[in-house]
Image (cartoon, helix red, strand yellow):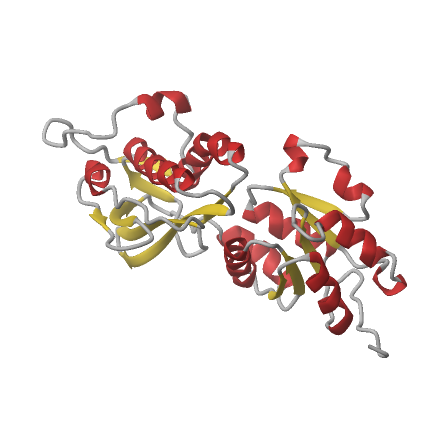
Length: 303
């Protein structure tokens, strides 16, 4: 069954609609929709404010979560947008991450839990009043804020990321990736996404640590954040390219500059490819699959 067409309403319209809905006068809709489309809409709406503060906006939708649902996509967008807006306002540096996971599946439906995590120090409001607009949603307690809601399934619904996992697992299973990022929250989220694809992940928090780990371990590819203090991704790549045994080691940039700056900067520094932030999981897997295992390196015997 093909995914339903996206609703024609512009993003600005559902963002302007009131979030505090009187459910006694207005019934919650039960219409077919794509959870992937809702996530994309919310990401598009939150991206400007996240970008203005220099934050990454991450979406986490595991393979076991079905994408073709029956419910109220407009109210779901509104609630997720509100949680995301709160997280962005409370975060000065790093990232915010919207995640969904399957709590329990049954014959005609699935209970999903949505959470908004952030790297800020302040606790976020639970927004139970907004969550109530979804009808029978149950607000989570504590941190991170979130809620659980039962959705009906469209017939022949498929997992959101099943095709991505099936398509790339053969190429990525067991691949050794060095993930270089100075933000601990970003490393945690990225590691989780990569490990779901069967990838063995080693992390480094800056360029100096990355160069040290390259000397002592064997990697198939490096995922390199470009904007890091001390030694950024560009300088780190130039340094490793100066060492002959790393001449063919694939280095993939993770950067927002593919859209906001010079898209050739990463390639000019010696990187092989780049993925844009916010990270799209399917594109990340596809990019890794193009480069993984092409030119594995070996540690220096004399090291």
